[in-house]
Amino acid sequence: MKLVNIKAMLEKARKNNYAIPHININNLEWTKAALLAAQAKNSPLIIGTSEGALKYMGGLKTVYNLVLNLIEFLKITVPIALHLDHGSYETCKDALKTGYSSVMYDGSKEDFLLNLEKTREIVALAKTTNATVEAEVGQIGGEEDGVIGNGEIADPEKAKKLADTGIACLAAGIGNIHGIYPPSWQSLNFEVLEQISKKTGIPLVLHGGSGIPKEQIQKAIKLGISKINVNTELQQANAAAVSEFVLSGKIKQGKNFDPRKLLAPGTKAIQLLVEDKIVEFGSENRA
Image 1 (cartoon, rainbow, N blue to C red):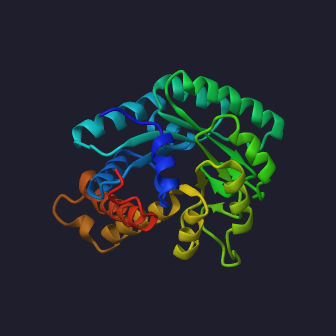
Image 2 (cartoon, one colour):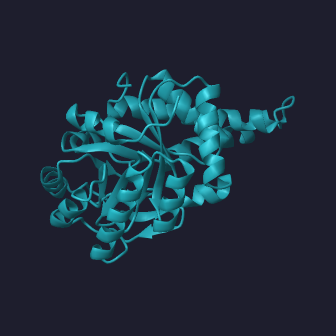
């Protein structure tokens, strides 16, 4: 099965009030867990790679071939998109040449007119490979793989201009942050979300999907969020499972020092949590 881009899956999600999980991968185990979860729940899935993960995993070609080979080996039949998360201009171009089916050009730190210009260029390039583009307006707060944002509520007028470039979806700063939400955090800005949704008419993306209360997730989906990025919660679940395996002494039993056995609890925890997110976001049986 070939990779698909995100346009059709996100438009269907927006029309039917559910969201597609975007799962950031970090290694072989992470990728297998995400793919198996999507297959088990009959859900479309977006596999995402940050620039930091790409450096760790061996580059665009390594990740691209890994994902394609695992789809074939694991007999995955649900729609899978391979997406570059928070990509620079140059990495977006390289990802499209490599075969990624979708890229996010993150020009949120640029002057808006430059962000607009570069987004148009990436959209034009993506059309030549039947790929799709996500852009960002405003700025997502927090830190992810060295990408640090101070947080900035998006301007609906600027959101409309970005939407008009032909992007498939738009990430908007609406009070969401990467990483762990502090106790002082209150809520997403639903008023701005609704304004952006009405002005753009395209699927919107919620970054920093880990830790947002379920009732806010559901409300955001009803207001146009069609793609939700999840990373921190999965890292926490993996770390907890591996820690328990080591601290309980199981690692000293038999040949449990074998990395395949050591990493297995974390892999299982990731898969189960991705399955939970699929159910929570409403994409189960939407493949």
